[in-house]
Image (tube, rainbow, N blue to C red; front, side):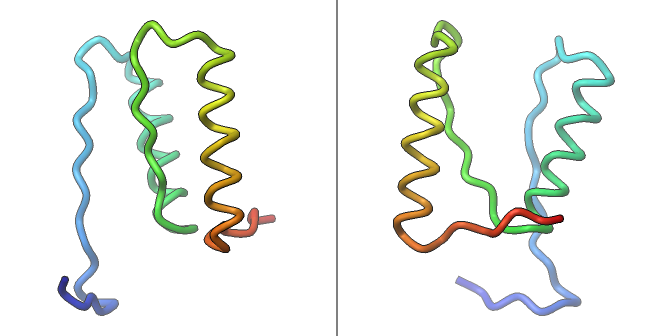
Length: 77
């Protein structure tokens, strides 16, 4: 794995679904910019038919895993 300097930052590309509105695309881009500036995002893909309760459970489990591993980034003010 290469070492990155401030002059040589990694580049990321995220495929965006064609049916997303321009405002959703912009919100996603801003979310990713913030996540990458504050830490490295953890992405959890879920099936399209997942219920809100299932998604909330997965997110809670992942937050606990990251916190318990000592990897949590403190929230920014």
